Image (cartoon, rainbow, N blue to C red; front, side, top):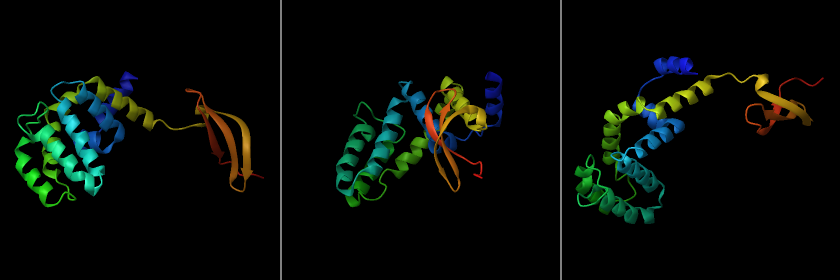
Amino acid sequence: MVANSALIKAREEREYYSLCVKQPIGKNLFQLFCQSRPDLQNYICLLEALDAFEMKSDEERKDFGVSIIQRFLMRQSMQCVYVVQKHERSCIHSLEVDSCTDVFQSCREDLHNYLSGEPFSQYQQSMFFERFLQWKMLERRPITKYIFRQYRVLGKGGFGEVWACQVRATGMMYACRSWRKLT
């Protein structure tokens, strides 16, 4: 397992945006890493708040945006994120003019720029990144007929049969279509 993990580590792309933003497993593991570090917890809380802001309706955005500014961008706040604190005035102005636009785009960019530096380097040395590489190794394993047990036919059709199958490793039951042609 460790040898395979080392091979994947050498082959895997090491780009922050791809590993920690686009890939769901990588994003979750990077967030767990940041939450385990007291100096990075507010950064992840801000990212989660910015994601929540994007999901809010137009009516809710202004109030929620103000709460984000008060919580993370104001110097007096206990959760102030100093990397993006310089955007306080521009975000307040953008929020007053039009809360439907992406008010916090510059904050998000600066936040990702910061997280892609030293925190990302530390993440690559952590057990969270090792766990990510293990997931990548599992993704690359081919699916064969030996992974499942077939129990019985659930139904037949013109394109094949549907079988009740169980994963050998976990015991989870699934309905799987058999590609063998009916004769």
